[in-house]
Image 1 (cartoon, rainbow, N blue to C red):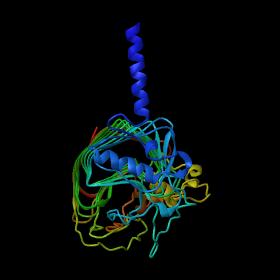
Image 2: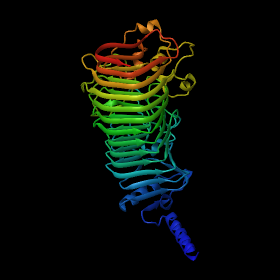
Image 3: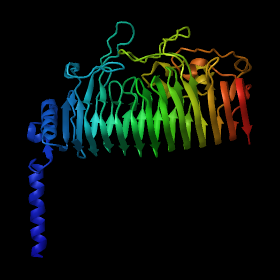
Image 4: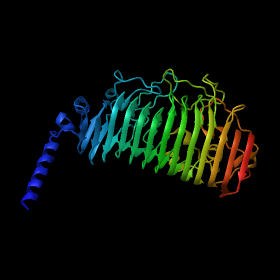
Length: 485
């Protein structure tokens, strides 16, 4: 009994020391002046705790329960940012708290962000707390178009970092993109919750640009823009695994591109549930010269999605030698920008069950995305029919998408295609920003395949819930297509 009491008092003593920030390797942000009352600015205190932790050789910056308001903070090497249950990092709603003079200029879009790192190693975010950008249009208005300075901050921007772990935590409400990693290596997301839908526009969940050796698993992601978005503005995304995730998005659950200069090589996506994705579920795109190859997609359930699979080889031809924005407001007459045409080959999709549905107009009315707004006509508009379209696999004249296998697939479509839809001529739109619905309603209800070679459907079952005047599958300029039961 006496021994047990001694151990109890020793344990209590150590806990008190750790709470005071005295434990070696633990840096309590309150010991550096943080208030955590939801009003006081705690940027300086958090930055000081991170700096001291990193300079000491590393450790844990401990954020206890409280509401800590911050502006831009730079995370350093060998730092674990640990948020207790009840702890919130709240983005300032004053744009002056997001200076960019000490940040590396962003390759895409504006440079402002809440949490930033460059050339760092061994960073870990963990815990049960929340990082909330509080990015509403009231405080961060969208300024797009010629001459418009769109200075909305991302939630996180890390460049050229290595050994990154995102474990637990809830990330929510950025004014712009969510978690953006550029040219990073050895990245692990596990048990992450993302809530970024309808608070603003362009709210991507995870943007993974030119990163290698990435594992995304057991995550629950709800985003307004693309949920899991692989980009390659300079370097390729290589060796990426996505598994055991639940994902919803107003635009795409998984998207490759549109930034697609460096390439996408060796990607595996498996055992995921995608739901409520009215603009499409999976989009694989090479439009800026990238090699997109060796992609495996398996064991996926999709419910209430737009087109289940969109594969696009195009020729926008963009290079990222200067800052650019990715916007989709290009007309169909836009010209290639000069980077050349890439390639798409070796795509395998198997063991998928999908229900394609028209978008919910009530939900669309609440979305900041202009592309989702529709009129009150009782009939389905061309835009609605285009969004809830068939599988689309398309290259451009003279350049084929190659070696695509779809196996053990079951897809239910809503139907309602008309005779006029069946007779439509589909524009090439070679250089236009690639979204499937830009092509309009397609002349097939199940799959439309054009400029492709060696495409095989094996045990692909597609059915209609309502009548449709279009053909099940339409092929144009396709070399070697096999439809095997």
